Amino acid sequence: MATTSATVRHRPRAFLSAAALLLAGAAVTACSSGGDSRPGPPPAPSTATPTGRTVAVYTPDHPLDEGQLKQAAELLRKRAEARGLPDARVEPAAAALRLSVAGQVAGDRLAALGRRAALDFRPVLAVAVAGTPSPGAAEVAPTGTVPPELAAGFAALSCGAPAAALPAAVDPGTAVAICGTATKAAPVVMKYALAPAALQGTDVAKASAVLDSQTVGRWQVQVDFTPQGGTAFAALTGRIAPQPQPTNQMAVTVDGTVLSAPYVAEAITGGSAVISGTFTEDEAKDLAAALTAGSLPAHFTAALSTPTG
Image (cartoon, rainbow, N blue to C red; front, top):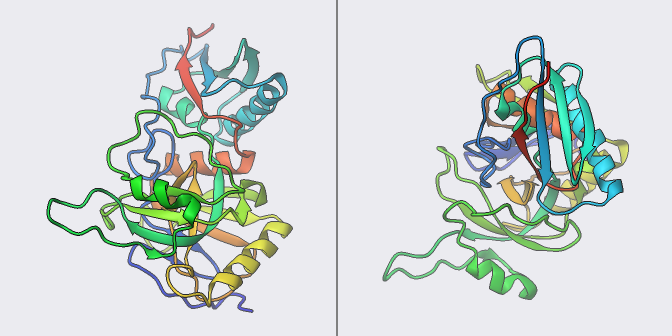
């Protein structure tokens, strides 16, 4: 198996190597204008005084039990600490969570902490251009084979306007039909039929935001897998590499949206990958903090509360 010299076949927007998994055009924080197609909470200015505390209340998109709220509180605290927010405190607030941090913090930074950040690596089964064909144009058949249980949903998936509501959590144990993302480099949105997840966010030991050494000013997220995750990643890439297109592609998804689906040429070992794209520094750090802390049991919408002195 390859160690650090794996070659790749790639589209202009994404490629996969032994040292890095590059996902071009992925901006994925809750307040991003790029990778995550879901509408995030609108940014809100902080009103905290320099000597006071900024307070935000996080409301989940579906009811959580006491144990889930306790888990979410700890994850939210870890995310805040990873983002360098001083003296972060999280406590239950009825069916929601209350976060307070020292000093003045902008509302969009707080909103980004509440995204679910569910990461999956899934084999691609079929892919097609999303959207409705123009009048008189024939519909383009998908490349690959759409499983019968996904046929109706895949055909109806348009991926056009942003969703009016947040999507439901995607079950990692089942095949799914979901949308990709559009970027300046690849403006055509694709839709995908994907197999069950081979790896999840729980297979990530640590994630960190780093500058791209090859592109000035571009940020990336380096992902280090757990030992089990690294073994599973090598097995996944080795299994799909010899398959015909598009089943030699691996989709990387966050919160039910495909960020990229690079082609795999051979098994990739080494236990790490790099998510790269049109990240700002804050976007890369937000995603790294979320992946390191772990996926929340729900998507939380943040609303600034009255700051305390």
